[in-house]
Image 1 (spheres, helix red, strand yellow):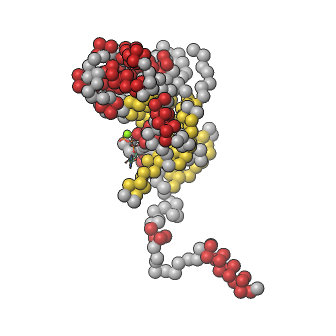
Image 2 (cartoon, protein in one colour):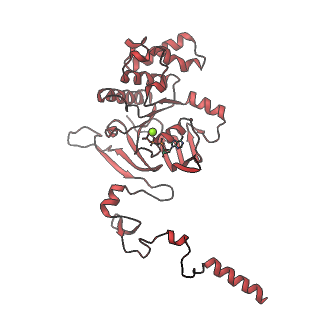
Image 3 (cartoon, helix red, strand yellow):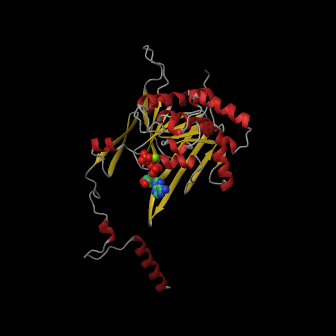
Amino acid sequence: MVAEAKAPIIVCDNLVRIYRVAEHDVMALQGLDLVVKAGELMGIVGVSGSGKTTLLNILGGLDRPSAGRIMVNGQNLLKLSNSALDQYRLNTVGFVWQQSARNLVAYMSALRNIELPMTLFGVSSRMKRRRAEELLDLVGLSDRRNHKLSELSGGEQQRVAISVALANKPKLLLADEPTGEVDEANAQRIYQIFKGLNHELNLTTLIVSHDLNLAKHVDRVVAIRDGKVSSETLRDQRPRGDGAEHGSTFTELIVLDSAGRMQIPKELREQLGLQRYARLEVVEGGILIRPVDDHPGHGHDTNSVFHETDSAPKETRLQQWIRRWLKRGDES
Ligand SMILES: Nc1ncnc2c1ncn2[C@@H]1O[C@H](COP(=O)(O)OP(=O)(O)OP(=O)(O)O)[C@@H](O)[C@H]1O
Ligand SMILES: [Mg+2]
C-alpha cells in the first residue's frame, strides 16, 4: 500500500477543561495538544483521573472545553450551537462505553438496538433492517439478532454496542474502556473488530484503555498525565530484517507541548533523584538533564514568602520604583 499524507481529523490545541466543585476548581485537562490523522487507530492510556474520559466527552460533543481550540472533521466544536452539537453527535461520532448497558436499551433485541439511532435519521424500515443485519454480521452476531440485552454475554453486548455506534456511519469512533468488563478472549475479539473496521472502512478510532497490551492492537498510543499528553508510543515501522513479525516493536517518545514543556515520568524522576531543579547540558546529539540538589532556593519554604516575619520586609523593585517616582514628584 502506498503511504499517503493524511489530513488531520482531530486537532486539539491547548485544551483546558476546568470543573468547579464546591468552590474548588478541578483541572481535568491542562493545555492538552493532540493531532489525529484521518484513518488512525489510536490508543489512549493514563492513570485514573488523568483526563481520558474528559477528552473523549469533549471529542464526542458531550461536553465543552473551558478554553483552547478543538477542530473535529473540519468543525470548530467551540463555535457550534447546541443544536449543531446535537447534529455533530448524531452524524460524526459513534461512542462505545465500558458499561454496555450505557450503549444499549435493555428490553430491545440486538437488531432493534442497532436500528434505533437510524430512526432519529428518518431511515426507512427496510433500510434500517438491512443495515442492522449487516452490522450484526460485521461483529459476528447474526445468530443473536433477536436476543435481548439480558440474553447476551458481556462480550456479545459490547459487540452489539459497537454495531450501534456504527449505525449512523460515523467519521470517528470513540471507545472508553470497551474491554474493561470482558474477559481476555472477548477483549481480543473486540480489538480484532476495531482493527477490521479501521482497515476496511478507514474509520478513525480512539480507544481508551488500561490494558497494558493496548499498544499491540493500535498504531499509536498516547499517554495522558495530569490532563496533558506526556508521551507517545509508536509502532516501529522499520522492517526488522530478521524474519520477526513486521511492526512488532515499539518506541516511546516524550511529547513537548507548544511552549516546549515536557513531562519527565515519575519513575525516571525518582530513579535520578530529580526534584525541583535540574540543569540542562547540551551534549553530543542531545540534552542531558542533571539533578541539582544544592540550589540556593532548594528546600526553601515558599510559605514564608507569604507570611510576615519578625525581620523588616525587604523593599521590592516595584516599591523602590514607586518611592523614587514619588521623590521625583517632590523635587519638581
Ligand atoms: N463532571 C465532573 N465534575 C467534576 N470533576 C470531574 C468531573 N468529571 C471528571 N472530573 C475530574 O476530572 C479529572 C479527570 O477525570 P476523568 O474522568 O477524565 O479521568 P479518567 O482518566 O477518565 O479516569 P479513569 O481512568 O478513572 O476513568 C478527575 O480528577 C475527576 O475527578
Ligand atoms: Mg475514565
